[in-house]
Length: 257
Picture (tube, rainbow, N blue to C red):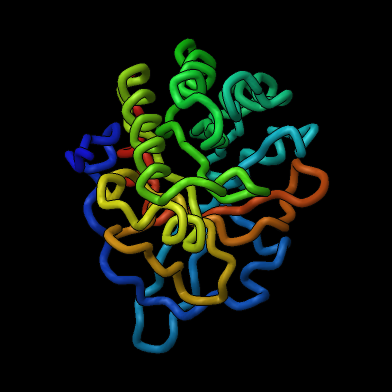
């Protein structure tokens, strides 16, 4: 299996960040009312503060979004587009156009099913994005669920994901970002080195200063730090995320059209 690294959009132009110098987020810092467009973590005495941008990810579970309220509270949004070989999220078109009208940088994601045909999954995802690929890199969501990952070795699963990644890049000109968590990645994908040049979106619900990196990666780009956030413009709970960088670094991730 090839381990040749492929360029992912423009993400390699983002300079590597300096080590974070902030204390662990407190429970108050993650409370719903603390959601803000550009939160600044409080530094302990003698340390500099670190700016992390905040955003959300949404799907059909967020039936309605008041984009006028949300656009002043978020710096970016990810929207579920598809899963498997023929499923499209029922709110994708509405959410996708709403984010665009609000002027929020957008990225779309596909929920990967290892037991379904990989090439058909690529086609299902990319045909939704060709007319409007969004600003942020496309994303493949890999997380173990039910028994979908049973019966495969991690080498087989890594090979399928590599095929999906290469297929998306061929169609959209951009290597997709990997959304995952530590258990899924280490158990089901062997910490495979092929993907370490992909942008990383890490799900980690922790009170540590920042999420622990999976083996091989040098930085995380996005961190989903809660699945039960609350933000103006959306009724009910919503996933909340940090971007590890400044507004200019976020723009450096934008897909070149």
